[in-house]
Length: 226
Image (cartoon, rainbow, N blue to C red):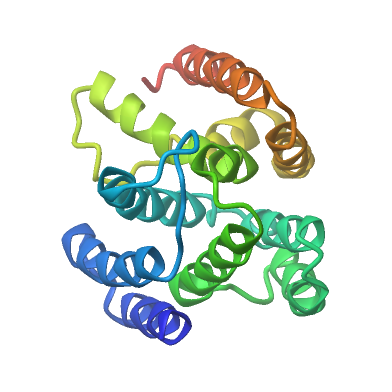
């Protein structure tokens, strides 16, 4: 059911270009299905508060995946990396040609493909490891995007729910070029995956994210766009 609704709701968004309020409603339905079919823990604790947190966590990570779908080869390349590390080679076999076509601007996943892929990867990994801290660090790149975007917009006095063009891929690709940024994004994704398996990985993850956030704002500020 979750797989079908993820694709269906995403397809509606592709056609109708839904508002963030409508998206939140649809994502809430999918998130509820995810919560009911998983049993995640937070620092080993499992209870109603964790389930409520998981509900909003899922929506946040899904939106993080959507945020990185803004540059040819970015989200598809990251999805491919995740599928390889998860040893889900059937997904990898599907993502590889999608990635290659997307890299050269011949194919685009759209909201339907991004939402479906997010649901599949989150569900697949949660069956292997149900600790939310691990999952957050593993999907550290999209997690960074959604958290940094909220902070950036709040600091700028803007609504945290309205889109902008100040994401990591906008800022870095403008300064360093698309190819350089893609290599950086792939490396960052792999680094976060590796950190998720380390005992103190979450602390290194937080440090990297804070450093990245400061550097990102500095670059954007130097262009006079803050």
